[in-house]
Image 1 (tube, rainbow, N blue to C red):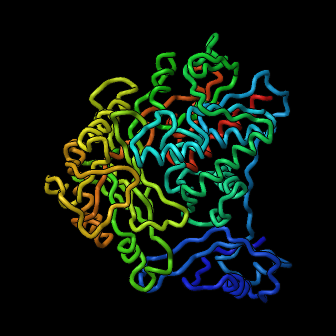
Image 2 (cartoon, helix red, strand yellow; image 1 turned 60 degrees about the vertical axis):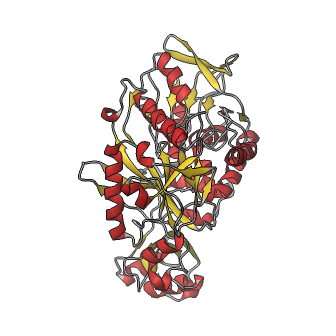
Image 3 (cartoon, rainbow, N blue to C red; image 1 turned 90 degrees about the vertical axis):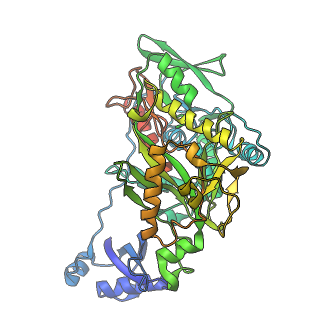
Length: 527
């Protein structure tokens, strides 16, 4: 197989143009190409009047070594693509099925790999199946009726189910787990284009279908998935986990327990701390969601010529404020919606969500400021949780139970907004005008204002007066880390902290990759 990199084509190219240009570069006829596989696709938009796609492709043809030697081109080489390998334990089946706590990406992908290896895992999910969950979330957005165990944070698929469904990650990946995760998504209903896109996403609507298909596959392989099954305690013996307690009464024996609970499982964090399992407070980031017209973002990112040809444009912005705090965009949702992502009564948090077509009028993203344990008013490993709760209670109170919103210009000048400008809100859940500067402390508001002004120099219109802010964005990542050893076990042997809630991931793909890592470690221990 021959790999060709940096293959440039205009925005309006046809599919056959890729084959023709590859053939020209290799100095062979297009008909001589037996197969062509897209490995990577990205957009070069540095020059707004000359935007083009860049491809990496793998080509199969005859006498490949001779073709490469004849071409003498730095863009051409032999393709050597290592594949992901799951370890072969070769042992016998354990006495008890591994128990996985949580059915977010970490739990589901860990469960799928163990099921494929014959371990018949049991996945316990505190919330509902994804269809019932979606009904409850829609009811919450319309009527304000919150189910504490089945909401935007909890339920089948995890918190990422109600997001943009981004599948990119910056995690270094010599073991090719990233590619394996994308292949699993594609095998279970996602568009195969995610296998080569620079910024793959599938949207909340597609993600719900994929999650169901993975669950069904696990069950077909002999695994089990139980809903409305909240793990309330761990059973221990001589420093080893021996099982779990479900819903305060049912005992399930297990020698391997994967703790893949997500970043909002605050009651679980408290439970394991009370069991004497070490926890650490960690840095994360908090801030506000900002909405702009998607058409404005398209024009700024792609220019007038291409603004309607390349789909909804994403962006990524960062700034080091004069106060020394980092400010950056997070979970940017082209054509998306701001959603009420609350999971506790009397507290309010927001998130962003897009459908696969990214067809909403607005772009939104979280603008967040880094915070460290030194910022938390309390002490101990759960101080970050209490810091989050303090902000979320303030958001709930100032919004009267609805999402508090404010125009950016009014936020900057310190007054409550009275009406919208030209930006129409795209929000799921009730909302009302409030003073967001009474929710976030001033030492976080000032860096946000400074950063928005700077971002306005990079993206035209970003600092416009009538862009809409919503708060509070507090669930960007887990406020704790559960330490684990080289075999990915906690101080309690057999307990595997996993994914975003344990502090080892920061999104759908990295959480799924960590689920694979934990499954590998369980397999290495022998069946």
